[in-house]
Image 1 (cartoon, protein in one colour):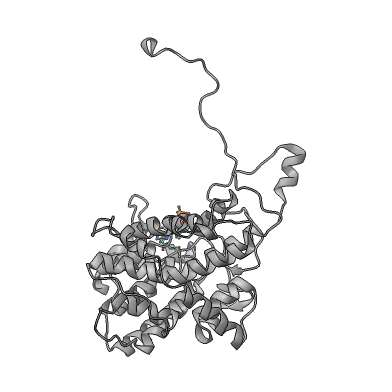
Image 2 (spheres, protein in one colour):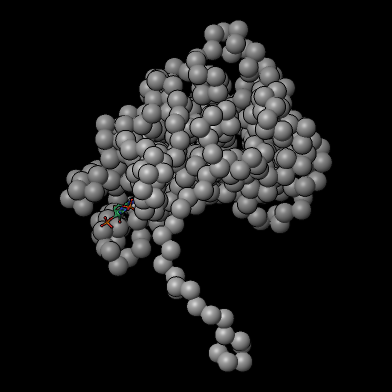
Length: 401
Ligand code: ACO
């Protein structure tokens, strides 16, 4: 690792690295990825073990505080988060300004950005108490806002949080429950959903997390920074890939059509890519995809459903992993490849997929933002550029051009 800042101070030389493929923008203790080996650790714990044994609240605590909580710490943390799940009543009025057919991610960008207007008593980034309150507010309110975005898009009334339920159970009820009708949270779905949240909680310096850090590096308040992260996550090359992956599987339909799409993905004249395949860092199987694939079967068993698209996805993976193009370029399924099949089985429309990703990733963004704010090395993020425009020239009045 070269500390390029020293080289720059001595020689004025700097690097050209579009896409930051080989530039570390920060130091971090949160998440470790070994892309060649397919390893993902949060604070040292393998993602597979966390997904199998812990809960999303535990992982949130771990990412924020550095250690797994004991029972007392977990109860206290869960109670704190639970107490913050309500949103200001005026926020409901804010929702009503959106077109009813607005994409829920468009609503998320707007509403989360607006939180700084509703909760400006926790926007002083220099006050550790306010930082903690803002962090808890974001983690607690994001499921409520996500569920409201869903309810708004289907024209149903909003449901208030029921704080007797778990973080994930509460979200499922606010999303799928109907006022005045009892809603039973299906424990298997709740567990699967909680696991999906764990799988998406953090992933070191991906595009949206880097966006959160870059926005935060100027001193912007955390609500504004997380809104910036949500905007970045929306893109189909990032969080939008889960929506795109399911749409692709639907377009492929049956396994017989797979070769046609594989051929398109390999054709350099066709912009089509296999969505849910490939990753900037993983040059091996994404360990989150392994858990996700297993979770598909669990959800299908619990709901007694069987979506033939899962068979198409499995077959597509098999064909791609035996194809020279994908082998050579080390393109494997990523976390988004199977998530759409599960989310669809649970009942989420595809427009909600990226919203769910944003919900879970808020924990990582908040933890990363806190780490950045307290890092003495942190400076305002300000990349350099290679200027390729004209050299200096004189202004020509419009009538002489
Ligand atoms: N299908 C077909 N070819 C692919 C794919 C794909 N899914 N992904 C990469 N390639 C090819 C590229 O065409 C390129 O080929 P070339 O070297 O001949 O030009 C090569 O593999 C490297 O691809 P890059 O785009 O340079 O790799 P990068 O690291 O910039 O991109 C990315 C990674 C964006 C994830 C890419 O693999 C992709 O677009 N995948 C599909 C979208 C997707 O699933 N995104 C989700 C990522 S995970 C997440 O955000 C949670």
